[in-house]
Length: 331
Image (cartoon, rainbow, N blue to C red):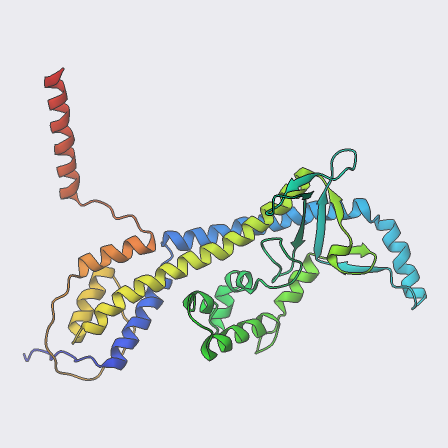
């Protein structure tokens, strides 16, 4: 039986293999960094819901529901009355048991009242430093699977980190933003969903900062836990995808140096990776690469802990036993 000829790789084939390797890494549910990302999302949902329960209590303590109801009735009766509105962003200020402001030292070493913005909207700041909506990264991380399933790239900002602005990045971010807002084929405006789910009736007009709502230290701490949880969702998303990008780049450099399909097959075997690539050209030569060492390096990047081999365990045990006997002889 004639031996099947090897397939010689070209630039397009190598590029396809590299892209498929990243797909393979993203599909691995046992990745510790992916597990951390999922855990962060689960905890964040709890923190957001807990914070909103406390926010509801704090807001109702200041803006009595019965007063809000009265003003809403008047608004319906008289179009000149505009006294209440729904909001999902709150500016809380800490006070003590006597209602006096609780101060803290700011970054400029000045003493000021302990205050912060807490925005429950999808693109609200997760640092609390601003009432403006400027944190799209959380939406990308929270709805990553949905964005990917619809052909968008929620990892674009991680891929473009430390790179100058460019049309590709702008197009990708604009597309993600439009989809999250219910455009570009999306049937749901996720920004509106978050705004509606976490809205409370406020009495008064003006911006968020114009109405500092008093709260206790404990209540303020609950709101800060929400910000920390939202920031952690962003961070774990960046850590997970960032590690995959670094591992893909490392393996990609090896694939770029390969000549034939059989070389990629050896690499794939090391990772238990089944490339979803269709090749049809034949002919080639061979190149030997140290796939085991390469996998060890990417395992370290991705957060996997390499388990020692049987031989390594035996060697470690022998060393420990030898040291034990030596210590007994000294004693």
